[in-house]
Image (tube, rainbow, N blue to C red):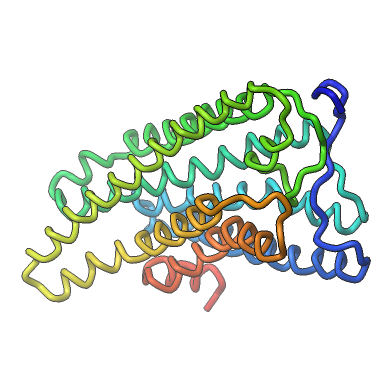
Length: 304
């Protein structure tokens, strides 16, 4: 195929050519998807229906859960459908949509985790000004900025990826992933996306440094708290967020900072699944186990 105008769709990577393994993949992804969606919906319902959780920290957590549901819904249902119907096909517009939404939810997640670090900083380091700084209007504006920035960022990435014509339509991944799509390009226009990637690395590193500096200030403030109970309470609100940030950053770095093989192995596919599925799956578990208020709200919701 000489250019992208002749490509009506792409062929995604199959987990197996054997029908039995395709069904097994469908069942495994279905169970993962149901677990992720139900866990995050429980978080959303707990925050919505429990008035004790109508605070900025839990408002941001609810948005994180919404983003996680949207993130896994971008690629898991399509992969399940392809396995069930024994096909590899995804339309050109479907691939564009996957890239757009994948980058949108992934970037919005990281932006929101950065905001949640700032929320903990204000709550612990400037408690007397917390209600004034993190008021309802401010929280709504912050969320609007996070979602808008994530969308504009994803549009930039998607435009850079699909600006170049493609010489092949065979994607060596089970969803439309930018690095694999760039391998199919046959002009220098892919350099536009490479510039965007470099800028993204600087932006991501900036957010990461901001989180690190924020927690340096938080830990310094916690050390000055004389009450042991007060220190424990402060740490209990920070540990879930720190764990989620560590999981997110470590899995994404492990997936993207290693050399990308021309022919992905089972290990490469497993690594991709890990960074795509583990953070949204673990987030509800981390917050329900580490945060007593969320745990109690979810127990009330379940009728225990």
